[in-house]
Each structure stands twice: as C-alpha cells, then as structure tokens.
Amino acid sequence: MSVQGPFQVECSSVFPFGVALVGEVTPVLDFDRSTRENKVQARDKESGELLWQVDAMDFDPEARERTLKVKVAAPVQPVPPDALTNAPIRPVYLEGLTVTPYIKEVGNGRSKIAYSLRATGLAAPRTGRDSKAA
Image (cartoon, rainbow, N blue to C red; front, side, top):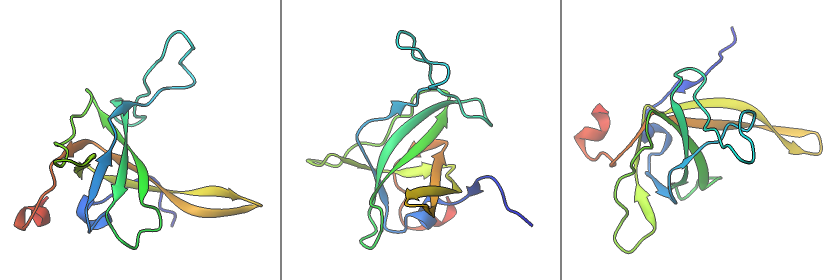
C-alpha cells in the first residue's frame, strides 16, 4: 500500500518544545499566472483558499533544521499572535497542521526525505490541559 498526500498532525506533536514565527505573514505568489506587472496570489489546490507563508523557528534544542517555512491556506491574511516583549518572535500554535513528505535533491545525485508544512490558521500557543485537547 502506498500512502499519499498530507498527514494531519497536532502542532504540539511536531513541535514539542514550541514554535514561533519570525517575520511577517506574506502572500505566496503563483509564478505561472503572475507577470512582472500583475502579481497573482497562489491558491491551495484542495481548498481553493489563498496561500500565505510564514517563517518559523523550532524551539527544539536538538532540531536539525531550526528555521522552516509554513504555508497557511486561509481566505484572508492570517493575523499572528503578539510578539514577545523585546523579542522579534511570536510563539504560535499552527492550527489544522498537515505534513507532506517528499524527496528533495541535495546534490551529487543524492536525495533525502523532506517535509512540507501547511496550516489553516495561526493562534496563541496552548498551555496545560488545553494543549492536549487541541
């Protein structure tokens, strides 16, 4: 049996130490439909919602890759939680998180398994009992 498509996962399972946004929410451009004069925002192939992108930081001290990009499919630009005082990061809970594995070419004929992350919303992190119920 082959397993295809994205896997629905809980944010706290993928990021047990937490995750934060660094930077702003930006639109993902549809490079096939955009021109130099007319930028067209990409849409999610399954839901048809507009695609947005955020840069995120994994708080796991042993993470191989600390920074990653997460796409968010939403009808309007998602509003991230507030930033920490005197810090340029915004701890976040990625709602409706899915993970899609794919093969990434890394050069010299080698490849590795990589993961694409997609969410449906951004919320303040959940704590205590609430994080288990989410």
